[in-house]
Image (cartoon, rainbow, N blue to C red; front, side, top):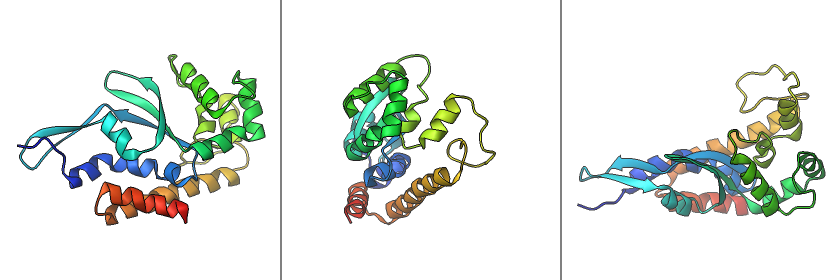
Amino acid sequence: MTNTIDERHRKELLKFLLVKTAAVRRGVKPAELLRVRHCYSTVNAEGLRVCLYRSDIYSILGLDYIELKVEERSSLVLFYNPPTLNATLKKRSNRLWLAGLGYPVDGTMHDMLSELCRRAGGSALPHEVGVFIGYPLKDVAGFMLHIPATPLHGCAWRIYGDASVSMEKMHLYKNVELDATAALERARSVDDFIEMISLERAS
């Protein structure tokens, strides 16, 4: 018996992570925060239970990442696109607002990630992570300041104030995920899918 996962099972186990990180890979979203189990198990053709470990997952996804919280069975992981995240954190409004929260005002992207990771070591995940994952600053600040939210339902995050910019970003991220879902179904392998997504980003 071989302790391997066939391509169909590998795609199925990775499907959620591949789709949710597609917008990061394409460069339209600075980062994505996901919980990654330390072992995704399945049964191979011989009936043997095998596991896709988080180290395998990180290698397959091929994205920059930082583990914000490591727990017994899973890790809370921030996958990020360095150029897009760097531009997001350098945006003046984001930089000044984060500095007001105690982040280094002239810090590099890695300085900011280190500070976020330090804060994430506490009991609660810091809400300013919303800026890192591409939510509009007004929505992150509105949530943290307990401002009454704009009454919209079925949204990926709570919207505060004018909904137009928020909805535009939300639809952009969602459309990339839908495109990725369709591409994954067409792809012959995980590697083929990742190459397709990378080519789309480059075009």
